[in-house]
Amino acid sequence: MRIDVLNGVNLDVLGRREPAVYGSLSLGELESQIYRWAADLECNVRCRQTNHEGEYVEMCHDAADGVDALVVNPGAWTHYSWAIRDALEYVGRPLAEVHLSNVDDREQWRRHSVLDGLVAFRVVGKGAEGYREALAFLAQTR
Image (cartoon, rainbow, N blue to C red):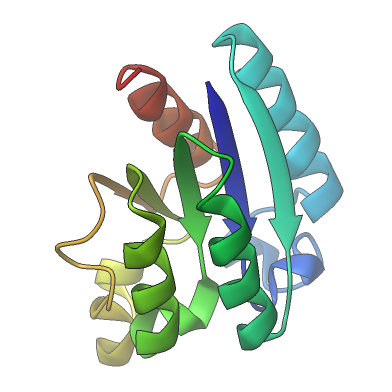
């Protein structure tokens, strides 16, 4: 099973940006852990990250032709980017939405996800472990 993990805006500064909220792992460390979990699940994973919304849309388009599922953490775009929602809808594959922090218990504007109704699985507030749960869920959909 091929899964793309698409991380969005500001996730490149993990480990340095509010570690009490987002955890102490760097993006590289998080990706290494994701690759280990994927290997345990016998999945082929590709991790990608960008701070540019249009590039994130392009990554979604690229995924449409080569993946079985997606794990997505668009970061703040989750709360307002209908362009990213449209691009993910175009992919037409099972989606799992992950947020390191518990966005449902944070500022009001963070409690809304434009991906609502589109994703098959959503996990918030479990830090890096949320990615493992998302991968495990998607691996069951084979």
